[in-house]
Each structure stands twice: as C-alpha cells, then as structure tokens.
Amino acid sequence: MSGSQEHPDSPEPGRHGLPELIAERRAKAQRLLQSDASSFPYSFAGAEPIERIHERYAQLADGEETEDAHRVAGRIAARRGAGRAAFLDLVDRSGKIQLHARLDVLGREAFDRLTSLDLGDLIGVDGAVLRSRHGELSLRVDVAPKGTLDPRWRELLARHSGRFMVGTDTWTVGGTFTGNERWDAYADIVTGIRAWLAQLPTDVAEAIAYRNAERFLAQLPR
Image (cartoon, rainbow, N blue to C red; front, side, top):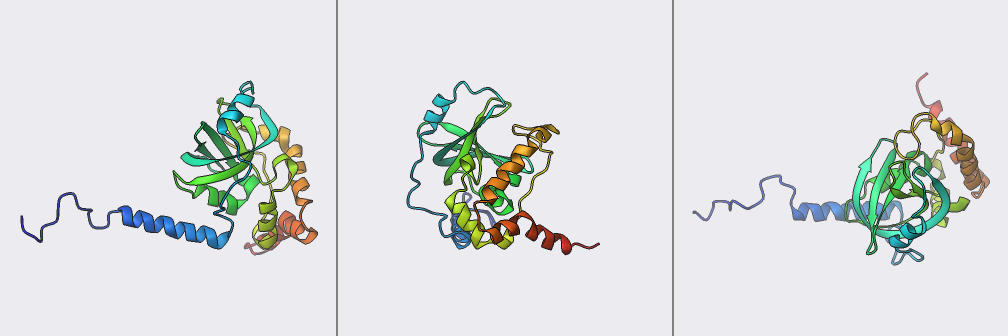
C-alpha cells in the first residue's frame, strides 16, 4: 500500500462526518441564541419527574384533555411530524412522555424552532396533560398554561410583536381532534386565545390579533 492511498475506512469526499456535525450543531446553537438570548438557561426550576405525571394521570381516559399545567425537562428521543402538528418523545431519568405541539397554538416561529431541534437535545417544556386517542399520555405545549401567559412568551411577543399572527381553524388531522370535531371546541379555543392576548399591552395584542394579518393580506396580489 502506498503512502498516498486512502485508508478504506476514511470518510468519503463530501461525507457528513463528526467535524461537520459538530459545526452544524454549533451554528444552530448560535442561531438560537441570536433569536432568543434565554435559549440556554443555567437551570429550569420547577421541573418534575415524568414518572410522577404518569402516576397521577394513570386513570385518564383515551382522548381526554385537562388544563393541568406541568413542567418537565429531558432529552428529545423521537420526533414525528403531521403537517400542522408535531409530536416529540421527551425522556428523563424516570420515564418518557409525548409532547404535542400545534402550529395554530404556538405560532410559526416557535413551532419551527421546536421542530428544528435534534434528537438528544435537552429541552424544558411547560404544558397541559392529555391522553391521545391512541392512549399516549402527553403534554400539550402551550404559550399560556392554565390561562396565564408564560413570562418568557410575554417578553418574546412584546419584543417581536410585528412578527406574530394568531388564529385557528376547524380542521386538524392527528392528535386529539380529527375531521371537523374541532367545531365543538372552537368557542373554547377562541376564548383561550383572547384570554392570553388580554395579558399583553394593547398595541401588542392588537398587532398579533389582527393588524399583522391585515398588513400581510394587503400585500397579496388581487
């Protein structure tokens, strides 16, 4: 074997190896910090073991939802997407729980940020407990658990009020609702949105509720 011959086990040209992966992760971390300086907190106070949530809601029926807010932290073990909804498995030392995130609840920026995370990433989440139609105990990721707007969301919405729009529809595939069943919950969904909008400064709430949408729609070709 000559000195110039490549080793059979060496990476192929253009292959995505460990150095490239590390560089990609560092670039992603930098983008997260630029968009939100609080993306990497030193602690996540109040997180409880996932096992405790399973014990408390062992009798929750399939398809049943609650407004009980809980805080958990762990690593992303799996990630699945279904258009306007995303499902992530979060694991800690005590167990696993599914995270249920919806685009119409979180907004485009937060939804994209959550779904762009990698397997193995450590995250902390606030959400309300539900059990899916398939029997999976889950946390519904929300900006306003128990109706109270998370202070970090309040700061983000106020700082970038021109970049958010809020709304909902009556058609969702997957998760707790299927088909047109969301018509039954439409009034509650709108009431919940109005409740957390009311916790924002008036100009910020108006921008997110309708002014940004008016400006966006005015730019579309007629």
